[in-house]
Amino acid sequence: MIKLFPILFLFFSLNSFAQSYSEQIAKHREEYKQDFVKDSYAPLKENDLQNLHFYDADSTYKVSAMVEILKNEKVFKMPTYDGTSKEFYRYAKISFNLNGKQTTMTLYKSIALANNLAYKDLLFLPFTDETNSKETYGGGRYIDLSSKEIADNKIEVDFNKAYNPYCAYSDGYRCPVPPEENDLHLEIKAGEKLYTGEKKYKK
Image (cartoon, rainbow, N blue to C red):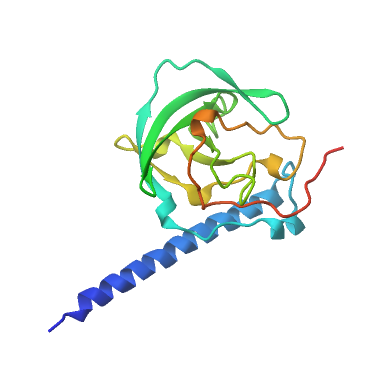
């Protein structure tokens, strides 16, 4: 006789996990949208939020990455899309398997934010991929992480939380250009998509 209970339990457990993960991402995205409304410096207002779009939550784009902390890295100027630059240093190399492809990326730390107590642990993960200019912003996307999230030389990277730089919505912002070493030769069909509203221009 086939024991259905373990099979049914597994089915409902997996279904429950998928649902709860989708709910987590939905909550994250709602908070992301509300941050625009709360921040007077932000380029989008309440009526612009309808033009934000995202891929469906997909847990296969949440990966556990091995972390190699880099030592004695020099500060460098990361170019921005307005022609200026911002100072960063390479904090760590991360490696992981995504959709069967071994991938390596670099985490950066901002010099300006490192001196701010509220952001001293912030790690910056800018990247480009093969969805850019087709389904996602041509200038690439960002993910925010924290050095506190590193445990046992690993960190969780969730591409479902990838977001557009402010430059995707308006000019007048100093958005870092993702370095070439974080140009991924695969499609990242997760996170924020192209903004469909009219781009704003600051006077």
